[in-house]
Image: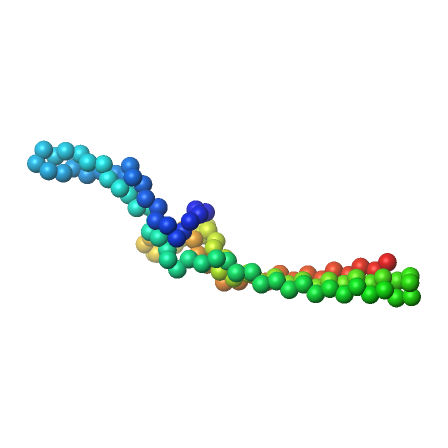
Length: 106
């Protein structure tokens, strides 16, 4: 995946063209990708709740609950249908949710 999607990707030594009466060859510029002004940072929301409990000086209970939600994930496409007519390289995945719970006693 290419970084810096907010910038255009320009090749200064791109394909050229023939110009003028003497048909002189001029070097050209190729735009590989236009800038995307709608690009944003990935958003992560995390929650971590924990309890530590000591009972009767012999038993200790530790519990931890963790969640993480991520939005606006930029992901490379692995398959592009030919009916799209272009070469879309990346798309936004909607969201990912992770949950975990740890429990320890001694």
